[in-house]
Image 1 (cartoon, rainbow, N blue to C red):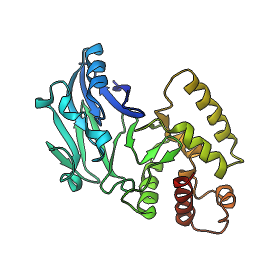
Image 2 (image 1 turned 60 degrees about the vertical axis):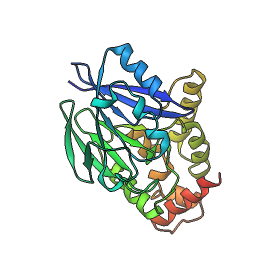
Image 3 (image 1 turned 90 degrees about the vertical axis):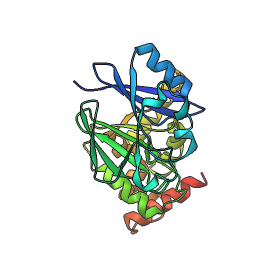
Image 4 (image 1 turned 120 degrees about the horizontal axis):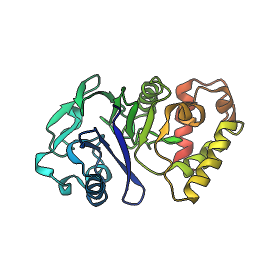
Length: 254
């Protein structure tokens, strides 16, 4: 049976994600804040077994030590970033896979926002946990990596099945949409998505997760190759990487 997914708002605009099997065994992706995560576990009667950490930024790890059952948890994160992460039980790298709640998890290096940022893909349940790499209508700011690294990372994610559910780390979607329409003005799917986002947020609902198909159709950072996007940013004959680089620089000052 596919795993059950729960999106948990944390801090001002972060998301954590719980996944659980039918036996009520649960895994957590990132730990921004313990209280809402502990409350979600208690409300469902789930037992937390494992925590997956995508990267070292404080707003993705700060709540770890206050999680229910902390001493017995398996903590999985990037081997290359182990020196900056909380103490890991299991270190993983690009291309590794491991079993979680009866399913296979694939590890992808998605450096860019930070170096050694990882994403976790569960093909059977069609879940992809991207944190601050691929985001809803956006991608993470390049604090450590280069545009080339992020462009390569997004290419890996874009190649996954389009029905994959993209579970990203923040509620930035409305702001990302306001930027997206300035660089992809003729995209009717994007315009429709922005209307949907406004309606969703007006009801107090989440815009995360989204499908990879929707991101491929509307996210400008996955559309740096598109001739209309290139023309809109004045780089009609540029390479895809140059187009992506300019898009990221434009978003930084938007």
